[in-house]
Amino acid sequence: MARVRQARRCRAHRRDGQPCRCYAIVGGWTCRAHGGTLPRVRQKARERAFEAAAARTFGAYLRSPAYREYQDRAARVSDAPVLAAFAERLDRASR
Ligand SMILES: [Zn+2]
Image (cartoon, rainbow, N blue to C red; front, side, top):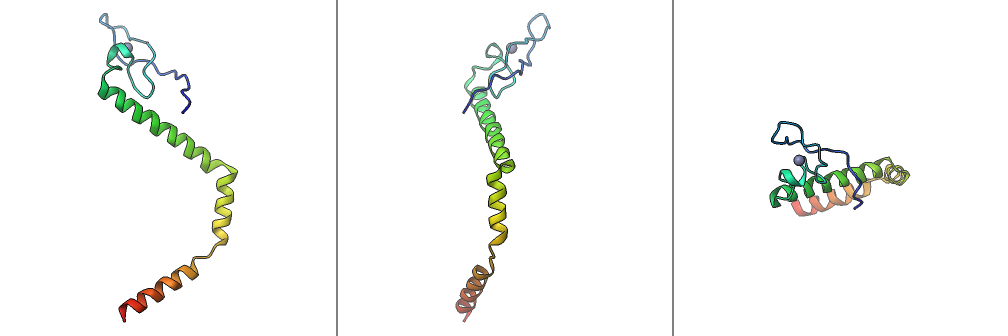
């Protein structure tokens, strides 16, 4: 998974009340100094980053020519024989 440099900044505030402005950890909302190293926070951030990457990948696939080709092929395939065979099996089982 590529770790693209993200622009998200830490949401925490410094003791003087000013925003922290450090880079947040990947997938997280705070920097390392503001809880970004806690195991629970890191785990959640990993999960979020993974889900975001998966969503990007899947979205790209849905927009790709490969998916359009898959849709075209699927449209040409009929499920009638499958349904007929299934109906026949149900019929046999009920006898
Ligand atoms: Zn911070």
